[in-house]
Image 1 (cartoon, one colour):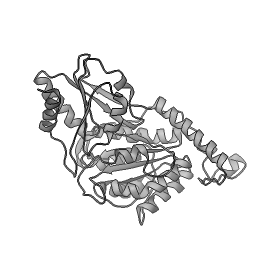
Image 2 (cartoon, one colour; image 1 turned 90 degrees about the vertical axis):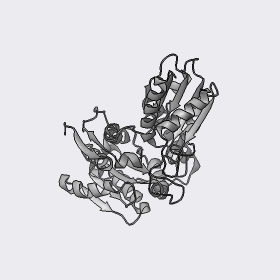
Image 3 (cartoon, helix red, strand yellow; image 1 turned 180 degrees about the horizontal axis):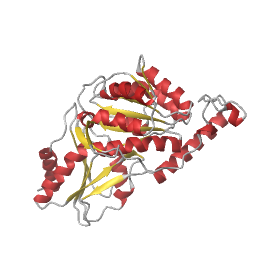
Image 4 (cartoon, one colour; image 1 turned 180 degrees about the vertical axis):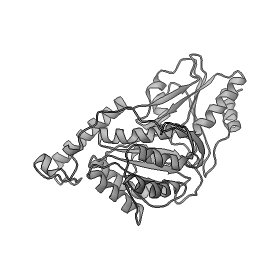
Length: 354
């Protein structure tokens, strides 16, 4: 588009997918992401695409499997309990090495929970909600503009690694409105889909069968080892994070992602105004997680504070990164509540004894 436009978060995410070449969307309604399928139902026919509301989330993810196997750019969106229902199919897609994009506009849980925002799907996304040794590349934008950029990037990453990519946002980001710009991502050299997708029998001189079943142990073990090699490449090449106010003499390091990182950013400014040297490491990829910045924390650091809209999930990765060099604390709100700037400032002062 090339110009800034005011858009609602969910609609901007959907438009970003279309701008990235997504032409197939399958989904099932669930709050707080319903504007995504609604927008797709209107826009996809305008660009020659297909929108289909499935009968359930289980049906949705299997439709994604079929479309991805044909080599087209395909996406679905859902929210927390809906993603849980898709977990088996996500494992199938990862096991078959098929590219697709899955958006999770997180809400509060567990169970049906509520329709207000949350961040309690972190472990599900980064550790795999389905079965088997598989990984999703998980992107966690901090602003709506970054969300658009990452959605457009997600389709290229999915094609590059032949792997599902999850865009993990919370309900706040889906419902907020901001001025955004749609910019084409940096072009990547992508694999030729004719080499693996179905429908190119003439070009390859034989048919392709997309499957995940292997009844013999040795071929399945070899397949798993090849998947792990791919995941190591992703860990090497795709880690993303932002360091904010991370001076050499910083004494408190906060860690947050998504909308919570925006709250923390305001909290840091308040702490700095009182002479407290605090900074933030913001993961942009939840997997692979940016462990390296924690290994390089200066000796001036006294404590690390993870802030989340959950009862504490990302904090597990923070502890792995810190590796017991410094105390790691946690502050979170849940049930649809978000930490306030005042609460985060109070927690920081309490940790530092101020």
